[in-house]
Length: 166
Image (cartoon, helix red, strand yellow):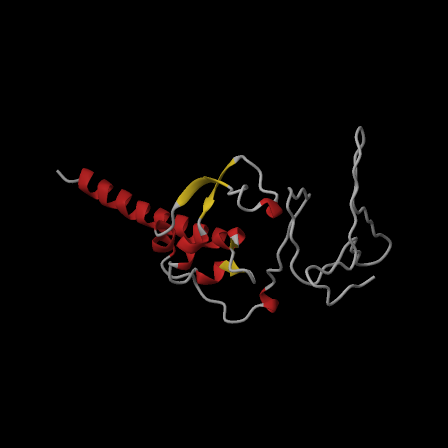
């Protein structure tokens, strides 16, 4: 079904399940038999307030799907400009987000926006709240490790040269 032009929220389908002593599924779907099977297909943003458990999560990465491929410039500088933090969610002010009360570790989106070349790793929703594409930090970390490795090899060579002096 569809719903549109409601005053606050529109739901195409809204399902809930509750009970005790059993596993409850709000929605359970499966698909098989075809060459490509999707138990669910969503066009648009998906919001989850709980945990996501999956056997595998992939992102399209085929070079044929990409244009303007270039090297990551100054990866170590970018990483050194970021600050990892520990935090708790502001659950009292945002009860509709169903935040838990645990201590988390992450990055502040506004900090990432301040680093030249990382601005696109931050998504701002229609209410101005920011999210971070953590998976896009991985290539920067890879290149930063490679830069450190190269620097370390250079320092090792210099030390060996100095140690071989009479």
